[in-house]
Length: 130
Image 1 (tube, helix red, strand yellow):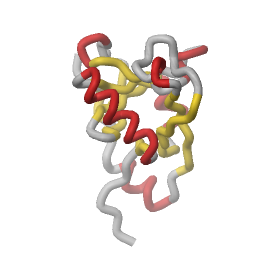
Image 2 (image 1 turned 90 degrees about the vertical axis):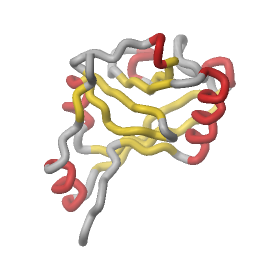
Image 3 (image 1 turned 180 degrees about the horizontal axis):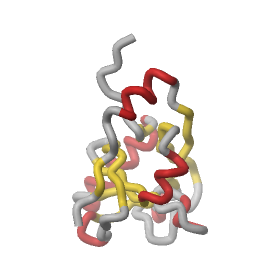
């Protein structure tokens, strides 16, 4: 089995639709999932100019053309799983852009299989530029 690329993060069609609406309204945006308590454990969406990604963050990839970051310490827990960003009815994180929409982003996950994990081990994540 040949694998060309294994995304660490993907979006459901519903999440991609909401991301497109947020991009149209706010311009360039990004996601960050820190793994902190409360809102910090949810994927948060911010305007690029309002969130500073740090050197302790890793870029997992992009969803709907939007970069997705996670703290390096949180990545240690999640590295064996593909993050599946979805959206459901409810209130988003207090500072996340989707909050006024009546929808909220959430993270689902699945374990990578052996072939995917082999590919990922050969292609480490990028650390964010500071």
